[in-house]
Amino acid sequence: MSTLIQINVTNNSPQLQNFFFFQQPAAYTGGSQVYSNSLLSTPLLPFSQSGSVYTFLLKLQYYAAVQQQVAPPVVGQPSGYTSAIQAIGLTPAPGGTPTSNCTTMSTAPLGLTPPQTVSGVQPGAFRIVSPVYDPTKQQYNGGAGAQLGTGAVVLSSFVTVQPNSNLDCQPVLKFYVATGNYQSGTVMNFTSSSAGAALCDATNGYTSFNVSYNVDGTWTVTPSVQGLRLTRTAAGLLTTESVDLNADIKNEAGTAVICRGHAASFNAPVVVNNLTNAQALAVHAEYQVGPTGGPYTGRMCTALNAAGNSATFD
Image (cartoon, rainbow, N blue to C red):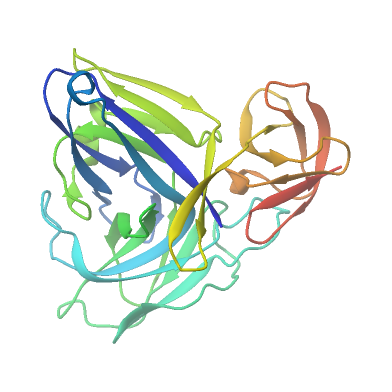
């Protein structure tokens, strides 16, 4: 059961447009040049002619990913071949509950081990440990993966993996929509593409965005706290269901919402499930907690589960 990022795109221009979706590159330690891939591309008719709205769904789960590289990566071309991924946790802030934040790569065959907990990884990051291998025979991409609502997984951003080294990756929950036709898994230029793109910023806990491409080439983005949850039926089919994100968690000063979720009650202890930004929280830290829009009460986080799905405040 996983929360989804939902981006609803409407084409208000007078002609068919191709749109593609991508994520802000992660911050890397242990690599060189950072590359970005398109997550998905789709054509969309004008709303005035078709009534069409395209919904892009992305699983809100962090993934470590590696891939056999097409060397060197070229804009407009696929980034690589065989890939391996592992769901992984991010290192919490000091005092937070430890997570499984490190995976080890193998090359023959290509793979990533189930993650384990290690120290020395900066807060908000995970680590990929690479083995000894000969980079003159084969090079590899390594970085942040993303899982689409369909179940497909794409390497969102990446660097060239160095042999026998640690690659630390700090994902950023900012997503973009731009006009163009970069297919899923194709290398694109983040700097030029993001300059005129619609930004869907999920770092403050928003999970749903209504994006309109206007007739003059500008964008209108309306974020909300509506959530979707990805579930699997008994027959193995992926389905979505709505999640009521009725709880805000603000920083101690109460100046910004840093995470959202669902609470059955706001009487202590307050248990908030379906967290949208669990890595922003730490055990024994103080926050302002309350229903969306307030009122808020100062509370201490006393528990944060290892999967990052719920927190308890007293």
